[in-house]
Image 1 (cartoon, rainbow over the protein chains, first blue to last red):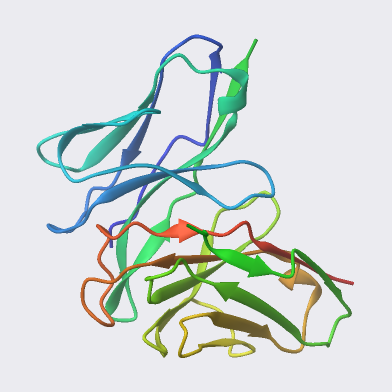
Image 2: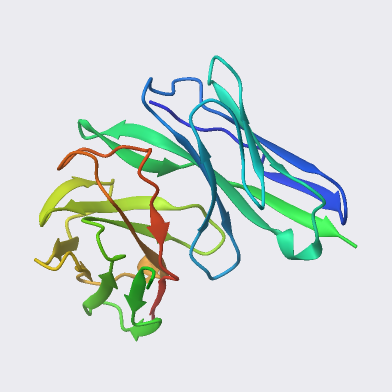
Length: 112
Length: 119
């Protein structure tokens, strides 16, 4: 099972870089890692996806080491509006097939 | 391009009643996923539909059921509602690499959810 483990919560301040790590020790060979952001009472929003090494888009970077057993979401210069819960997603085997399974998420609080 | 749309936004039901929630996937997406998110908790996988077939279901009782229509929209039904069914129900959709086989490289996109309150 590609169960994911993330810190429950993190605190940061405006303007700082935030790195959130997700462990997925049993990730499958063909599995991608996807990160989502969720605000209260809203659906999760796609942030970034990667398979290996580094991926960067306009809002975040994703670092994946060679063994792919973990991944780190990097948010540059966070603002108050980045306060949200962040989830990493990998596939997981259930009932004989892979399904998208979310971990418990990391609650990020950005302080002024 | 329209995203995943869900209806209703809010629904209040009495214990023992039935609730029906609806979802329209992104155009071109054939897979629909349903998740339950109780207040303050994570996303619990409920059901996965692809090409009109139920492909997988999470650890939920049979009173949680659904279906996918020929246009790939989907419906989630919850029978004999219990107080603990109160939650945000999220629908997501994705393309699929191979019919009936989930591939995590196909990004799943979520709707804004339907709040179900059971009183």
